[in-house]
Image (cartoon, rainbow, N blue to C red; front, top):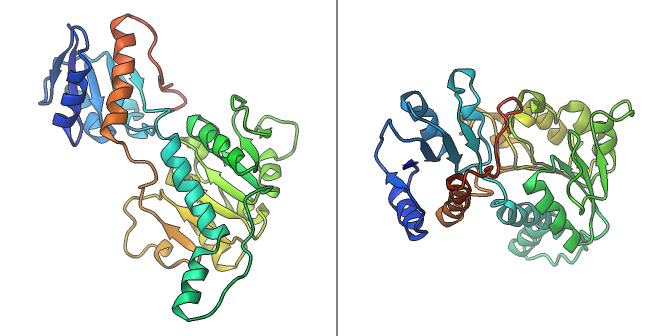
Length: 309
């Protein structure tokens, strides 16, 4: 009989949700048991427990990012699955909320009201603007679908996949163009970074890319903080080469008090809150995968240890 170890901040809530599903042949633990062969929980807690788990076969995380588990010393012969297809709605609310915040000049209207000034300047609409997705996985695909509700153009930059029908134009690093990434950036009104943390994504948003974006462009990073060259972003915003940036993720987290992001003009920090892991969503994900596990079928959302996602 499989033994499940729940390693989350709210283990009893997850226990109740999983027990309600009446899963077959499953013994559940909320306290550490080294003999558990199935683990479900937060990556940090899983990382701490991994060396002590002697019978591990499958790990299901409550997050999309699994870089904490990619360290060579932690790699074992087990199946790792992450959380996908659950954050798209939350990410869309977040990304388009901030896009509209700037497009509809919400902050300017508030300041005008405070100063008793009548401000009826037209902020424009999203229709016809071009959204660039740096990374088009399940979250990027949901963002692309949402963009079509606003009748936006959508460009996507990916390693090689073209799975989203809502992306109008794809760019790949293997194309014959001398630099397809800069060609991708050149025509964007909005750049949204939705990349996992890997060696290949570190500082992909560098000075060259930021200088290629139109000066009116808005940058939003909901992937991982390593993707953005911090000094290059500070320079771009300080020198008005970029209209604004919204960063939900940074490196490190939390930021030290001396970090320049705290005082960089036209930069908003949202402290890794764009898409939280809600127990009912995560439990439903685990339950779906466990039924496959119990039947000996391939699990959904398997992570490639070589790619890191």
